[in-house]
Length: 294
Image (cartoon, rainbow, N blue to C red; front, side):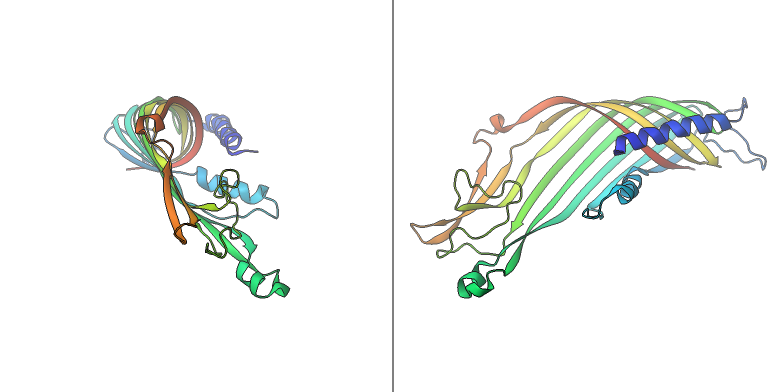
């Protein structure tokens, strides 16, 4: 079961179970038996966190096979903030941050050991691909609310802004020299250009920065299981305009004419405008969150 299906299933279950438990009261600021208000009122603030990354992690834990790795690749979290203008209306801010920092390893022959002592031809070394990146998205929205008792439904719209970047850095164990101009190297998704030049390899790749902006619509349900504390699920649809800059790739190769290692950085296009790509994109999402009100 993929993550989207899991989120939609949880949201549906919450809707059916929580609605069945809803209290039939007329006062939107529901008061429990101890006289404490369970629901936020005008002037209240709220702060929440997205539980989806943790659900994804535990979902992978139970569905993975023996060969899969289980680890965090960085930070992947969304934070919600709200201010209630009225009991049934609020403005909100959503900040989503994904910081990626991971390393992939590839085993290759140890060229030096193979040449020095052919009897140790099974000697190996490790090449490493280090990937860093960040996706930062900010949303400003207006929220309408309606409900009775512990169960509150809401819907609204938001303005969206985003920024993304990614960088790949390749570290090779076998150096490129005049004696070994084509050292054994691990092929990490296109870092070796065997088709156009088998004697060069990529040392760094920077994906063009991506800027986006757009509009979104959302709807969800919250269940207040304790005074001013709720758990909920949200579904939404976003439409964005996205602009992506040109990618820069740095290659290394052995220059025979001067007998030394040289590096060269290439761009997708010398003309910056031709290297730009832009378009209109839509995507849907679903998540589960925990919210605290003050």
